[in-house]
Image (cartoon, rainbow, N blue to C red; front, side, top):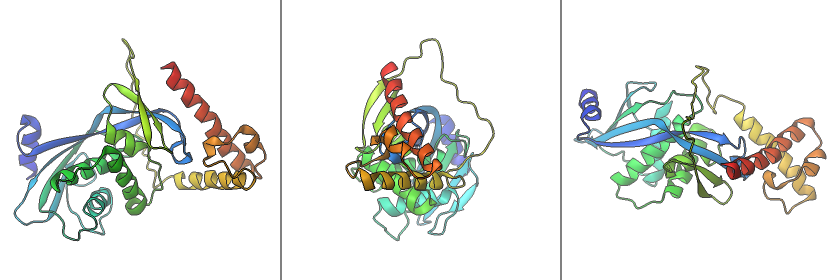
Length: 273
């Protein structure tokens, strides 16, 4: 199967081919899970998938440019297999029967480099499975399900940014995304005779293996403290620097101050672009 799919990538013939891009965030770091505005954009690198039915062999997966060359997906799948099974489990409404489907992935994204390879893979699988099941499902719903896969199957309590921008994949534009309302507007990008360059530093980075969840916890703690005095504040981005200054611990003050000022910088950047 892998040789057949490699030929398909080269000739653009059957099996069917699909693509999901990676993303960069121009500005708005640690804002998505704090209910604010972020400014991400999709990139030309990403993950391609070829797929076709097989004769009763279940869900078979092969990959090029990922961790494994071959893998049969089941509920205890590890690594990128957890994202694939999670996508099927949610899109099929917990259907215990895996589809009789062969998948072949080819990725140009450096894995674990901060370009959202996991979100790209999850969104790609959700869209592919929705097509397989003949489901009419919006890009926003795809993003919400992809976020749920991260929470439930990968153990990362991420915000909605990565999944949302990849699911919508705006052409030639960044996206000013309101993470609380889950709405967006396009911000056209015209760099003229310059290019946006992404450099792979070869320093692996995964949210599951980082202090991401801990940082989210401290942001939540800061918000909860502020809400004891200002219950009308729903998200940390809605607080002021005066609110941040009365937090009881320096770490909480630092987290809140970053979120509040980063939100101001994101708005200014979108306006400037």
